[in-house]
Length: 128
Length: 128
DNA sequence: TGCATTTTTGACAATGATTGTCGTCTTAGT
DNA sequence: ACTAAGACGACAATCATTGTCAAAAATGCA
Ligand SMILES: [Zn+2]
Ligand SMILES: [Zn+2]
Ligand SMILES: [Zn+2]
Ligand SMILES: [Zn+2]
Image 1 (cartoon, rainbow over the protein chains, first blue to last red):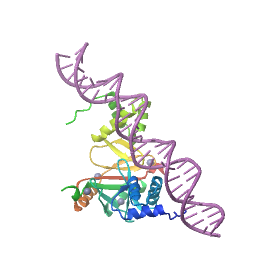
Image 2: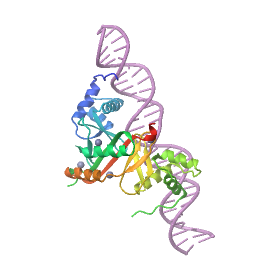
Image 3: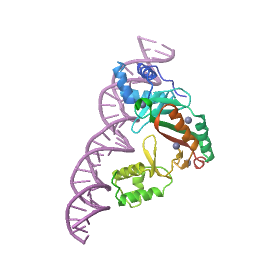
Image 4: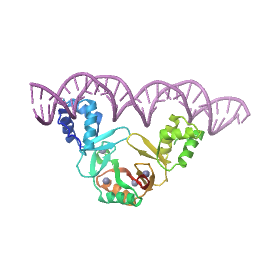
């Protein structure tokens, strides 16, 4: 069992900021946004906080080409439909996919099965 | 139209090595394997060659936590079932999933749809 | 085969997101 | 208020990957 996290101004600031955002943001972006909002938080702390929240299941992580993006999501298992243009994100759910992944893995003798699934596209706003 | 790639010893060596492997390897691993095989190739060249092959659709790329892994795969669209222990890899196919992803994205007004899907688990050999 | 042209190579430096360090500051509890 | 366990943040370090650029190799042609 791990010691519970302590309530600090920095962690509140990060959580509050993310609660007000709707799409994925990088640690560096969050660091800047916090500074602009007057709730300055050290970059190291931003990274540690985001990771802790992600580990705790409070945040979803989207790993792009060269950086990790974070987003406050619903707590249940789901996947993301992300716009390549503006990062607009929709949560999507597919029970069929979940079962398919588990079944095909089991058929090959694999256990402790997990999966990653992301859908990308261009949203209506990013067209015309 | 782009100029066709030239046939070099280095590119042949990389392609030949990958043809004889069955699971995902990193650029650095491939670089070492080539050196051991006597077909030494510069690290920069390994990176460039792998990227070129991946861009051409000759290789599949698996982006892990901290590095990119490459593997020679079949040419048709498919996904991977990867062992977390030994990286043993099985190609899997799921027409239902493909259609589901396209449909759910279209329902949200997204176009130019693509997706990523990987399944992870522990294979029989990595248990006991 | 010799030569011009274009591409490729590879040793090395640079990049940049992320992680590590560690003295100082805060929190939680008594 | 006092203390011990955590947490913070300025800064340095890491490390896969990318950039540089002069030298080497491939292609095409005479
Ligand atoms: Zn968009
Ligand atoms: Zn799922
Ligand atoms: Zn295995
Ligand atoms: Zn697919």
